[in-house]
Image (cartoon, rainbow, N blue to C red; front, side, top):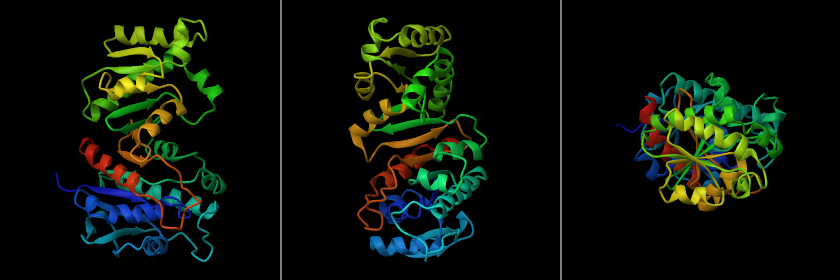
Length: 329
């Protein structure tokens, strides 16, 4: 396959997004495998080039096919008043701008002008300040692609983690761990795995309580919800096992016993993946008509503007986009 076009929205202009995007898309490691089109404000990108001391010329294009090798190619959405930009600070201006970059990138992917979208971090507080009615990337992508409940998948060193619940309190997450929800998620997760080319192997369901509750001795969710769901799924022909204690299931999957793990709540899977390799933990949004990959770290406002931010995660997000994008073309 020829080097695919990958849309890279700039992220929050006040965070490290512009810096890691400039570093990543300008590296030969990435330009040898992909044609990245940056969607963002020209002045912000130009400033990020200076901050990072990146030796690259900028090229404004109207559409991805105008891409030129040897340049940082930009579809410019000039929506930042540079005189008011305060790097490292939350602002409505930056929240609105970040949303507009994502919106354009999704449009390019929906129109098949790019093969995937690889996103740097955005700031939830900035989105809220701008009255954007979505809490984060996943919700934005779901809304703008008409996907009711997108799936979040982490991939790191061959370990794949799905999430039954995401950005809700731990107390609410426990209430969402139901037989019906588990059955629905496993069925949809299997479809996503198949689309990504993973058709062999078994999915593991993590336990909720310590040692999966020891048959109801301390917590009965495994007995009342998780085990019945697994029994029903197995009867329907799905290759699934569990519940398996969360203190061991991720290690077992990493060793190859399982092709993926269904984490029951946000931190359960996040801690496992990020402890393994923080910078190379990449988020994939599944179940949509387009492919989106992402870094899984924040805007790091405390170091924004210093040029110190590592672009390893941004590079990895682009690499994973290239790895799987053929399935979406």
